[in-house]
Image 1 (cartoon, rainbow, N blue to C red):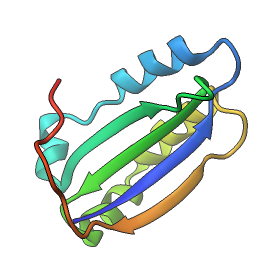
Image 2 (image 1 turned 180 degrees about the horizontal axis):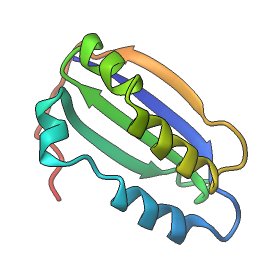
Image 3 (image 1 turned 60 degrees about the horizontal axis):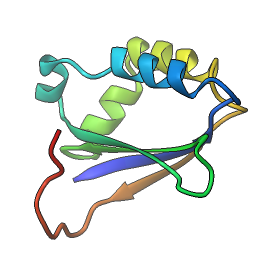
Image 4 (image 1 turned 90 degrees about the vertical axis):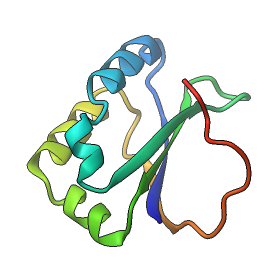
Length: 104
């Protein structure tokens, strides 16, 4: 499994709007068939405006295909409206998983 982790600072007072926009950009069922496995959104405890997004893909090829889609860039540009600057990105190869998947 391959993925990316994003860490970003949401502009003061824009968290609720950012959360709404992120929910609107949730991948469709068809996207999951194109290699997107899952994603998680977390907010840092010490800084409630700092968001961490963890995205899981079936493999690196699926990730690269998604990254080159026009819609992916459109969604990214839309996110930037709510962020203080460019986010930090870390691409990763997932090695192990222990426990149950997170539920709704």
